[in-house]
Length: 147
Image 1 (cartoon, helix red, strand yellow):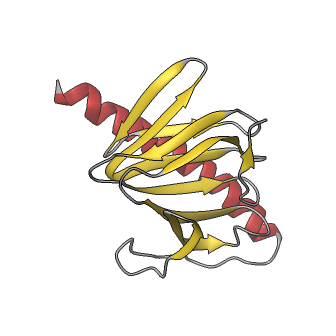
Image 2 (cartoon, rainbow, N blue to C red):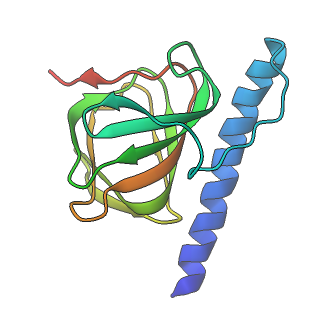
């Protein structure tokens, strides 16, 4: 039973690496060619909205492509929303809860999720553990409440 989960984790990491490489290429073209290193335990977190905070790894979430560690407090509820740009994430601790018209997903440690820009969904953190995940966005971060 561990093999499929491990394989999924490896495939998720490869997919996120591809997305990151694309964004890094965009940064290289902008003259920002630098190695980035960050620890989820040492990065400086800023509250983005009540119950959700992010620590930028590289890029600028207010201006363009970026990567960040993001924390949801236990029971966090972002409500129904979308993002303008594609968002990919890998769960590191706790559980990232996700719901759209196709159903619900509980992203656990080592699992990957890609949310296309413009896709309406709900997200939140596990009621007991919250969530810690690494996310990469192809453009600036926004949260557009669903109508």
